[in-house]
Image 1: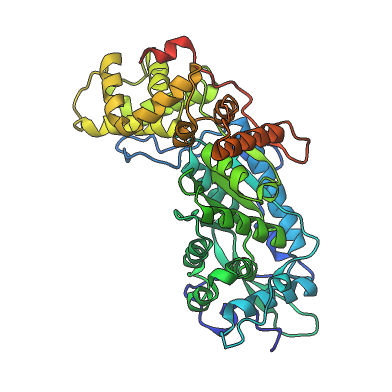
Image 2 (image 1 turned 90 degrees about the vertical axis):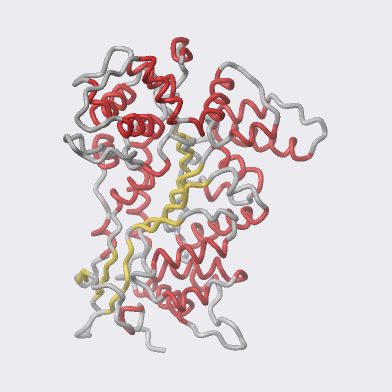
Length: 468
């Protein structure tokens, strides 16, 4: 087989008209795709997303809105370092690495015969690479989709080709390139489902027929590994991951596969999961070390007195409620925090709901009482979970079942403390959960190689926030 045939684009007409980057001899083309983030301010500016505040704009709830915290800043600085390091490790100007990509491509495009694949998982593993997985713990309502969207914005989503020159040859070799791939965690926790979802994400640039054939259950990890290497993916984002998705027995296989692929390729991963998902990872999987290798990032609701919350309240008013006045009334920020507990997604949801009930151009009056009534209507489905959060913050206790049920909404620290207060009672599942909580505590106390990033500001509510 000729080693010059390295990508689908060499053999088939690509589904899309792709831009080609022509590298110089000895140049690493992947480094041209890495964003420059050197300072905390640069990271904040890159991650931030604010809505259009012009009159007559869209008043639907926008899940892309992100007001960066210190944890966001740290995450994006660390991600930029990981993406850069991975680009250096996977240098297409290096003949040894190119041979690995060729092997990965052969695995995906191999037409199966009675003997099965001739490529083994070790053949598509990159030697001497470091594992680069960043686990972001994001409770519901705090901006899971906004974080995923920010990763796509900052690290780009362009599909393109790299042409790498060969010394002494008039024409170089073309390789496919995808900057960022977002793959949802499968609702059934199945690695096979994840693999097929990945194929759908890459189908604009890759022949999906062969890739789907390769996603057999007994080879899905090797197939995922091969597909990511074939496409020179810069960053993989997995999520959102909830407690329900990640608690089945198959989810343990899913965690294990993600750890295997990340370790074998050195490709940076971001996993966006709830506290419940983090607990399940520690309980079920043997991949916890790999999947938290570059740190755990706890993104939490804004405190009432934080600058981020003041900006959130101002943004919600100007975007959705400006018909009631050019500036928000003095009570607005605290009332909005009381009904949403500082969760930006819920604040936007409340604003969008109220705006949708007003007739265009009509003069409106918004008192605190009317606002709270509207907010309770907007958040009817979330009230049970928000009440659980309030109860936990007031020192209330829960059974193991209730802790799991509410774990997507509680803070990771709250889940841990609630579990550690349980008596195992010789119950295996309860004992296992308590041990997982203890492991989280150990991770929180870990050294510099196992970083845990917490907000620099406290998120505890003040007494007046419970009035609503």
